[in-house]
View (cartoon, rainbow, N blue to C red):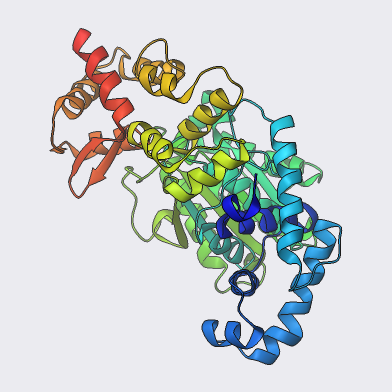
Length: 445
């Protein structure tokens, strides 16, 4: 491919960021991106400083030399303001070859080393800036399949690169027998964190069941044992916290404890070294006191769908020379849903199906999305009164030509599943794929 025709600034930024992360476990800072973009557009140091309101001496004498040095290390060649485009072109060609050789089926999170991770504008930089701050709380919110886990893994990797200890816990892994008891759950949490930090289990030493309650015991274990056992700040990443919502035995006390830990971080030197990252699907429907909930504190981040530019970049990574019309045709059916987009590109790039055939069969049992659609259908067909009502509500959504109003809990659950898009107090199908498939199969039931 010809660089001038295919390598856009957004793609050049992705290449630079991916190479920097690969070598330094961090992404380019905002001011470095401003310098890189200004240089990409042919601006002088003076013009870049004026455009982005920085001191020219700071840009030319500090940020510039450091940026070109970092890129030189990451790209394994000498990089300057004059030759960086050529260096990025060569890295881009290597990445293209690597992408075709390492193409794997898109399931689960995107590995840290994968070239297929696409950044959202401003999201990653906000997360990286937040997670290293003392006593920080970062809340990542999005429906299933939008990339929460892929982002949280990068946030934790960034924290580790900045001298933090990071612990990742996927709450889907907790057994139900643990979740029906606050005592068991908090002891499980403490033991899990201890193991990941590779410190000895001292639960029996620090857990006083005669005087202290479960929350107090858990707090003591972190404060008096875990914090003193490690030298660096602790970043705790809790993924899929929605798993806890149905368990009324633990949610109020547990989430209240997390909020109290965050508040302690504002005044206590010990708790300033505790950083919390939680990921969940859309709004939290459980009734929590606003002063005891972690869901109205800290920095909220909501993941959006890919836009046309990001989908184009991802197509190039898959070596697909799709034009604007082809991209638009795909988005007309599936929107910018990250998983659905990546699955389409995988199937086409591995030559299992053409784009035209994929679009024609998308909502049918013969299409590439049949398993994905069937999993949603199975969820809606569970034999409970609540689920039956939810299925009927979604049937009304997909058969209506206009957005409709639903019960707030039904909106929450359908949005958490990623099936609907909210428009004020109304909803419509998230994409044409869902409308066509569920309009057919729910009418058959």
